[in-house]
Image 1 (cartoon, rainbow, N blue to C red):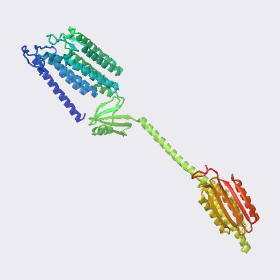
Image 2 (image 1 turned 90 degrees about the vertical axis):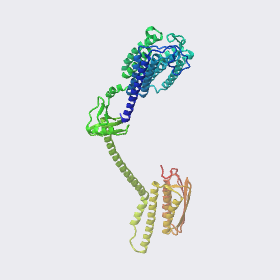
Image 3 (image 1 turned 180 degrees about the vertical axis):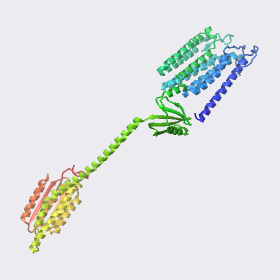
Image 4 (image 1 turned 60 degrees about the horizontal axis):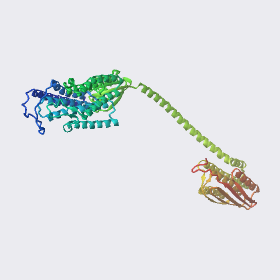
Length: 611
C-alpha cells in the first residue's frame, strides 16, 4: 500500500475504534442508569422534547439480554470495519457496512426503549416502530449484495429492480412510522395498560412480511444461480442455517410463548450478520480472504514485488528469477508512475518476456513464455529474407526483360525501317556502283545526274524512316505537321531543279500509315520530274476525318517514257496494299495528273497508335 492509502486506512480504523468506544460507553451509561429505581408515578422525567404526547404511567421493561445487546452494537461496528478491509467490491462493501450500521442503531433503539425510563406511551410505540426501519432495509441490502456479486447489477432490469426496492422500502417505512394515525400495520389501544402485548396484525404487516421473505428468497436464489457448482453446497448450508430462524420468526409472528419471551431483535441481527459473514468467508460475496488462494492457483508466472524487490506473493507455477530481472523489476517497483507497463527481456532467460505493472506499494511482474512467438518470429524473418532475395531476383529479371523488350522493339523498328527503304537502298547501291570516275564532260554530267538521284533517294529514306518511327511513337499528323513534311520534300526537289509547291488543307489528324502512302506516291511523281525537262510540280492535299485526297500535277517540256511508266506502276503497287485506296491519273508526253484517294481508318486513339 502507498503512504496515502495506509494513512486513510489508519484514519478509518481510528475513527471506527473511537466510534465503537463512544457507543460502548453510552450503552454502559444507559445500562447503569436503567438499573436505578424508577421515578414515582406521575413524575415527568424525560419526554425528549415531545410534549405533544400526553404523559402516562411510567413503565420500564427490563431485559435479560441487555448485556449482549451492549456488546453487539460495538461488535457490529468492528465487523463493519473488517468488511471495509476484507470486501473487495465497493458496492457490496457499502451495503455490508450499511447492514452493520443498521444493526448497531437497532440495538441502540432496543436498549433505549427497554432500559431508558420513558413514560410517554406514544414515544414508546414510535421506538417500537423504528425496529422496522432496519428490518426493512437489511433484506434489501442483502439482495443488492447478491445481485452485485452475481454480476447482473448493470442489467436494465436490475437497475429497475433497485429503484423499485428503494421505492417499496420507503413506502413501507412511512407506512409503519405513521401507524399511530391509521393503525393499518398494527392495531391496538394505546390507552390500555397492556397494549404492548395485546396488539393485532393488519394488512400492512402482512405485506411487509411477504416483501421480506421475497427479498431473502431472492438473495439465496441469486447466489445459487450465479455461483460455481462447488459453492452450491455452501449455499445449502446457509439455507439450512436460515431455516430454523425462519421457523422461529414464524412462531414469533404467531405470538407463541416460547418465541415471544426471547429477544427477537438480537437474534435477528446475529443470524443475519452470521449468514453474511459465512457468505464472505466461503467466497459467495467478494472477499480478499479468497484472493490469496485464487492468486496462487493462477496458471501464470506472476509475482508481486515490494518496493525493495522482495517477493510478497507468487503463484504456484512461478519460477525463480535471476538477479538482472530482479534489478529491472525493482526499478519498476520504485517508479512513482502507476498503471504504467514496463516490458523487457534479458539474455539470462532467452525465451521469456517480462511485464512489470506499477501497483500500489510495489509492482506486479508477469513472465510470459514466448518460445513459440520467438520461433514464429525466426521463421517469419527467414521467410522475409527469402522473399527479399526473391524480390531482388524478380526485380533483376524484370529489368532484364524490360531491356530485352527494348532491344527487341528497337530491332523490330530497325527491321521495319530497313524493309520500308530496302528497295531504295538497293537502288542507291546500284547507282553508286556505276558512278563514272572520269573527268570528261559526259561523265561529269552522268555523275551529276546519278548523284542527284542518290540525293533524292537519301532524302526519301530519311523521311520514310521518320514516318515509320512516327507510327510507333507519335502517329498523329495534323495539318501543320503534314505541311512540314511536304514543304521539306518540295525544298529538296527545288534544290535539284524541279519547280515545286505544295498546299495542305486537312481537318483533324491523319495516321502515320496514311501519310507514309502519300509520301510514297509523292516520290513516284517526283521520280518522273527528276529526269524531265523544265518540270513544274504542284501538290494539293485535302481531307477530313474519314478520307484524304492528294492531287499532283506535273508539267514538263519533255519526259522519259520509261520513267513515266515506272511511276504509274509504282503508284498502283503502293495503293494496292492500302484498303480503300483509289487512283486516277492522266498521262501524256508532257504532263501527268494524279489523284490519290484513301480512307482514314477509324483506329486512332488519343496520344497513341492503333490498338
